[in-house]
Image 1 (cartoon, helix red, strand yellow):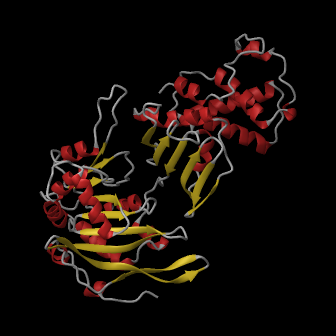
Image 2 (tube, rainbow, N blue to C red; image 1 turned 90 degrees about the horizontal axis):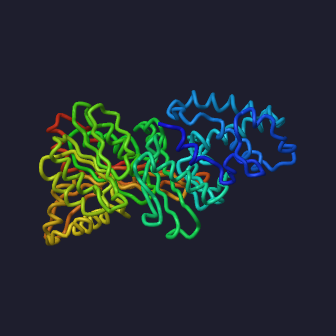
Image 3 (cartoon, rainbow, N blue to C red; image 1 turned 90 degrees about the vertical axis):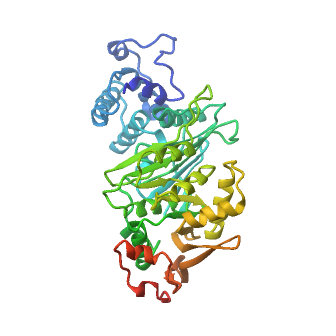
Length: 463
């Protein structure tokens, strides 16, 4: 990939295009060497110094450099950086020099002021509310970051850098977009005129190494007994919906469940922006596509779900159902594609059922409510609901079995529920306990050759 486009996007908003004060463009390196000094660096503001060094550096970089060879480009930038500081007699401490270099390198190779935040593994979310207001989520708490952009135009260049490689666009005619970073982190961007505070970026970060079941146990998200049950249910090809509110950890939990899928099965994932991190070898990842500038070429989640049925899937995983694709997902679950997984926004297991009903009605097929409910009761076996608590922790609060129909009502049974035992130093204590009820799908699990101890479903109070 040519460096030319990245250079143009990464230029500082105060870029003078490499022109001298008299309006003439800088020429060769020798011409720049004889140019009069720009003044004492100590009298310049840090921003002015960064702008001046960055503009010279961008002017001297070879546009044909391959940006994918990060270390090579970084070493080239460092050599030119040292040369420019020497030529302009700019004296900086080692710490100042390192800071200046890292910020300039981030503008060219990364995502500008966001780069150090994205590189911090303790930060789980980055929220840009215009050029000067950047917030982060760290350990479940939101706080202000000590970085900022120089202008709204600077934010727009970073947004363009994120979405352009994915073939997506954002402008006044299409002022919001879903995208992803190279590491799979989810990105949503909204720009004026629908945003009144300037360009807004929301980045949900994902670890390079997917979170494991053992880590969830360590975080207190779930306890061993319900996790053992869910592992057996996935292996026995039970259909599951992971539900919860925004930021409750649905996608992370779905990733963990997917780790229990046997490696000899063909898995097809369908997402708006590919973010699932499956480790099996036989995985096909499909991603929806918005319409182009002429209004053509749109590929919806529903289109992809329908297409997966022709791709001989053993498992279908839909990152999130949020519309008419719900009816196709239900039909897939009811036509031999057992073991399918998906997520849905909701406030609880019963609300999850209601939302799936509503989304199925969005398909416009004019099905009676009873027919849709029969589809749901037949297709969905388990609903795992998560919540984000006020201390910032994310926990499984219920594992519910969809039992069947009684009249026009879908019947459900809580198998495991979260029981809070107290609060210590602001942290919520407790765990997921069994309700003492034996699941109906236990027969299917045993038929798959998986035997769970009866004690797994005995009611024990959490300590």
